[in-house]
Length: 510
Image 1 (spheres, rainbow, N blue to C red):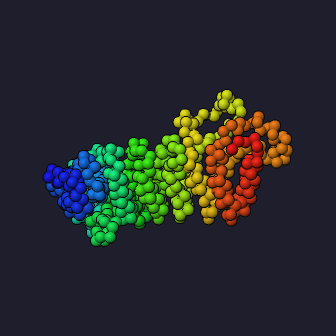
Image 2: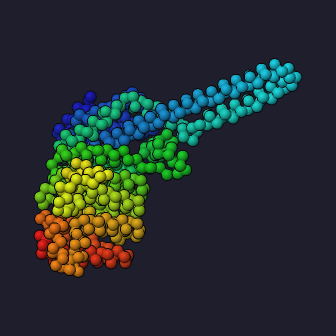
């Protein structure tokens, strides 16, 4: 309670030095990540630190770093405890199966001995003695195989002391820290003030960067040396799921920790709808930089997780209408261009194109409807689109620029599959917005086209992609024309001619 009041007083007075000293001291007293046995007083320090974050997060400022480092360690201990419980249950089940096998073998041995005694076999004693010897050796081998059930997953002789300490600490933390307390810290970020939530996001990104890069402490200090007491011990611990997966699949590397990254996505979700757009734009600038650097990580799994996080956040953000000339969508989707142009993983680029395709399907202009199509009922065997998807179609406005840029960048990719996928998506949007068949007919017989156009399509409202992003669409086509693939270049030239005819058509209002 004394530390809690001291931190609050220092925060209210604006004394950042005193506040940082108190929070840092409380973090050190908790012994989190120190590799030492935690007693009750240390666990109480952890509780005080997390309650301070839950109740008075407005006053913490830059000391959120210590809170997030503590949360990362607490969650790691809870995961270790849960894995210990699963391993204990698996070991108990294996021991039970071993006992049942021994009982069945003993029953068979006794039955065989009884049959020999009933037949009066003179060689029964010697045979029984041999059977007993065979059974004993078999039991010994079974016992040895069962006792080595988890030898590779649970025990390392040279780390036995550190493992035992970590298991004990994990049990203490799991009993003292409920998950609701941790969830409340992140959920209440939506109620923080503007400056407080900016600092909250900044420090969460900083700790997430430390986790992913493998740092054990502040950037540049001595805590980053490789040892078995901080994050490096957490990554090397044989009880963690990642290590178990690597040992089973034959891998040797360790997956970076992404707990803070997961929570960063959740916090962004919480604040997206509750904050004014100018304020959220400032928050997103910090989040986008961290997610972009993570999407360019050398580990493909971590990079794909960041790209998928971009997809989730984009879908939530694009459900809101664009406000005038602010072009929030363009700034929100701008990181897509950086990831597509700088990523070295084919799987990441393919996932990025799939995310762009989903965004276009959900928030694009939708299929061009001909006259009378609204009155027609859906064909048999075809399900109508969900109401929510129909409602959000057409909300993509300034976001078309980064979307088209991503499709154009795909044309310069060295992988043919990526280039073909981007070209297919780009031409699909072009054919959807411009009736290519009609314009091709106009090249052959202009008079016939003039009679067919009014009857087949209504041009009262041209698509957003052509009315507002015509230049961006042309730039995307030029990316393919300047590429090394001749077949795509020729088709894009034909599409440019089609767009020229579209501009020359007086019946289409622009």
